[in-house]
Length: 395
Image (cartoon, rainbow, N blue to C red; front, side):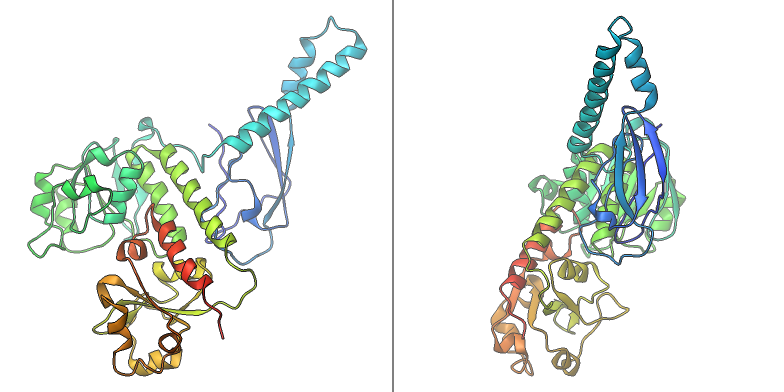
């Protein structure tokens, strides 16, 4: 089995000084020195690398720098033996051409490959993982009946080609359109998962983004329940890969992650370099007022779009008083459409007239689906935020 090198600029770095990996057509030597995210996304020669996100990251020592590619000696040796009847002079030429062909072939695979990691085929089961709630869960075989209890997980399943295996969902499913017709397995409040309804759906995998008392009865009954909670953009990409692995759609997940990462980079490249990041307050709830801190998924979108999410808080979505909001005095005020309904309602609130964002007409609404769903469409949310930030000239 080929070896795979994982590089995550947001979470971890891989330092491989002078290590050489040999497999297939190429040998790859890695040395240290420059940012990990400057590496190609894949190394299809036994040393394969992927990046979690296009976000910038600190530059600790021991980062990957260069890739030195050369054909394995064993391959060249066999090729030389096949031309023994050629004159010594031509033999050298043929060997050189063979080496060049091997190198070009390897480079072609390197450039065209889009895999971000080892693909998970149906035969890769059982799969055991520790979910975001700290529980170790094993999925014994490729699931054919899946319950999805978060809209972004449902979107991811459809994007991976596993939408037809979904037998139950939570409320709020809107994308793709087929998701809105799936059976709901929630209680009368429309929010809390209903264990009885889930049992009746006979799932062999339950995916959720939350925790609660409803989970333990399902696990006791033998249903694998896995919690995936994305705290930032990097986590969201990691969850896509996890969903692919759990459903036997590892290759599709790798391609989805690659496309999403490219979208993130495209948005970032359109931003003006070295500009002062404007302070952005994102209202997620109006009464009481709650914002998206820099430590939240929404906050990570703001930062990826070129802004500075405020407030900074250990709580991802803290309550914010009027005095604190005026002290923060954001350059841009974003609000989830479900929270504010209209811009006029925001600007008319008592105590809001003194905010810079209100005075300079930088109050905007943004779709809840694009703001809160860490799934395949998060690049659309990122672009929506980035387009607003690009129009802003910070004071």
